Length: 364
Image (cartoon, helix red, strand yellow):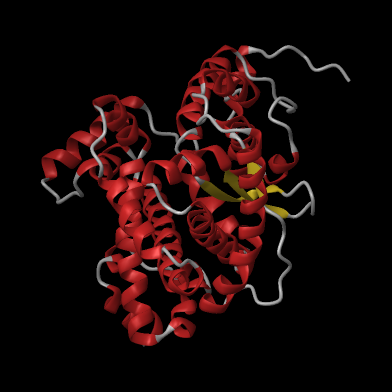
């Protein structure tokens, strides 16, 4: 079947995600990504085998502590190098941002052919994927299809990055690999036990990234009026989002931020609850890893991390874990799990730092 050449009118009517050439993004990302640590074939094979086993072993303790996903199948994790993660991420992004069938497409095979701006965006996206490919230890992707089962949801572990961090921290490799798996498997359990979460995330990200009808003049007018009003705003990037986004977009942004905070905080809570019984050196690993999170970075790294929100993500672990710790300590895990019932039981932004307010509103 012949696909007509892309025209200017096609490009102007496309959604933002369709304007990104994800096939090119994957190619560029793999070309410019930094090589991983030097490892022998023996070390690589050992790490891949151990991570595969750890991802399965982590599932039981995580399910026991959370009370979630009992009886569901335990799919195998994908153990990837940096190039493999870039390919997977290039498939995942259109699956998350695009229509429901996007998960089944390869990034280079699509019904819409990006034009010049799409290729420029693809190069930019490729640079971002290259940067992230050396920072991601593991990831649960609820949108892409598992090639083995054909079902949505893929657990990915990036072996070179895990090896690099365990060497940097000088921690026991086997313990560290299981510790990482406990966190990532918790994400798999969260989404597997609560399938509505993926649609909730996709719909809010879609509202956040979709094209609006607001003109530049209207945007400038709204920002000016907001600044003149003197209404209190959040600090930093979140405050900037309040200015730049429409009220509807900012509401979606808050819901995405709260969901991410809950998911990460819950995973950190579970990791610490399970760790002492499963990971002999967990105290050493946790102390070293937390110190690594706080370590100073060069100016370029700080700029990139700020622009893509990685420092905000680090704050999510702390605030989210404090919320989960408090609620579970006060009402127990069974009643905490009410949070997964529906969008209405998700915490509000104001409740993340005031968990008793969530308890009163949702649990009564």
